[in-house]
Image (cartoon, rainbow, N blue to C red; front, side, top):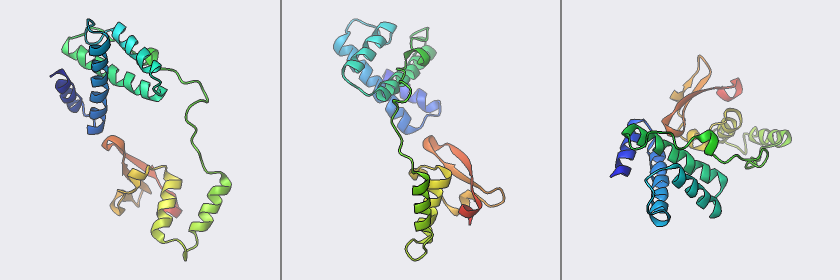
Length: 185
């Protein structure tokens, strides 16, 4: 029952469906750990949280996955506080998230200047590349939109007076992106 209440609370807080699903699954994972390993412990306590985090680390979960679960439990902690089940912030992200050593984050491969030149040279060839595909490359290269955002862009999303493109991103959030003149063309 409490999980359903949590999901409803997240919905009223304006969270996206995927976010709610993710938080709920993380809390269910925590609760099943509690039932399995710490039978006498209340729902969420500093002790149970620390044990759970240690368990995740021992199981070899990626740091990013553990931090996501910590974040979900922090939101759950907030929910339990609004209901009066717990009266303190048991989880504090600053203290409880696992710090990632600088430089060890996942490396993102970016195109070199030379590779960008080659790509642009290739897409300029009208015989080989359609205008549509050229535009796709331009938008990805010059705006930083996600592919999932790119596929839903329509002409109506462009404000030709201000050279702005309106994009609906993750969680249904809308943002405006400035467009270069050549991309606008």
